[in-house]
Length: 231
Ligand code: ADE
Image 1 (tube, helix red, strand yellow):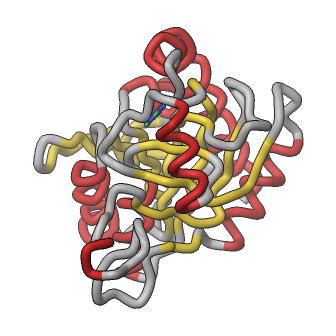
Image 2: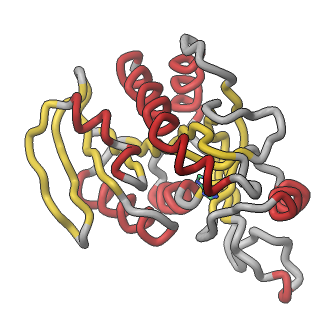
Image 3: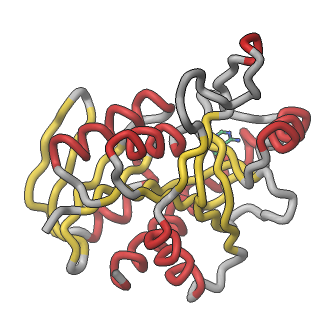
């Protein structure tokens, strides 16, 4: 049986997994620590990718090539774009797109990677459904399904939020999901991203992020654990 890869960008985003799993081994590869073991009944590889698309891509590639993971689940916090989302609410990815790809000078829409058949990487239907089912039992707030936007930028102003929604849609913004999705797409490996909102990506985003990131990261972790229990 192949393990499930669990990634978070920051220590807080994987803390609950490491606290609760039965650890078998740890290994360091390119500055990322991979912890293997069992979380309840599931074989997992847990890792902290670091922030941003390159870190997330390297981590995902190693989960697939070094550990042969069956699927990749990314968990953590994000800035809300959809106005109906409050801090703490959950987003399950239906797809992910890199909002900072810009080849508009070549006549391509924003977010479109040149000479590639798709730039919107769909999440896996089975894992989306599991995430929805796991989140349905959670009474702490709303659960929204939709496209997640990722880029190497911490978004912290309302004009940028409007521009992202107008050009690409998307329900929340973060810095890793679409990199994970892109690498998984190249290898035909299923993925899903679960994010809890830490802020609204507006002028208060930095303060909200500082105040809510840890609590939101734990919510997202809790939902992923419930997904594994239901699998
Ligand atoms: N992660 C959490 N909040 C974010 C924001 N406002 N922009 C990018 N990534 C985030």
